[in-house]
Image 1 (cartoon, helix red, strand yellow):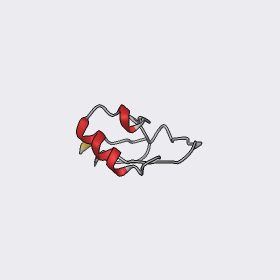
Image 2 (tube, helix red, strand yellow):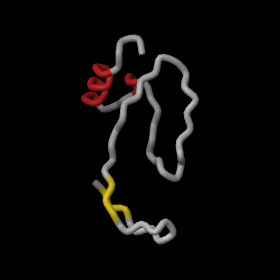
Image 3 (cartoon, rainbow, N blue to C red):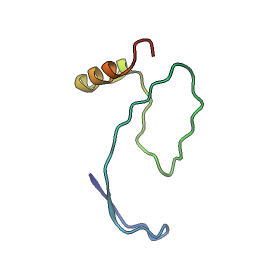
Image 4 (spheres, rainbow, N blue to C red):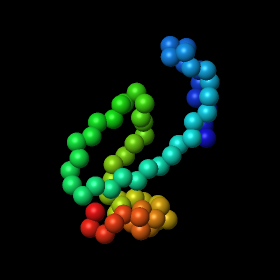
Length: 67
């Protein structure tokens, strides 16, 4: 959890956010665009490129073989 300051231009009071990790697996190329003003710190990588050994092993276990 981290604190987000108030944003008067959006009419939003200060609030808290929780960062969540999602795992998406595809069987082919995907044309995807992100809403940059809403998403930051994202990284697309293959499971083998994940440096944290514990997270890498969990991702590899969750991805269907051949995906």
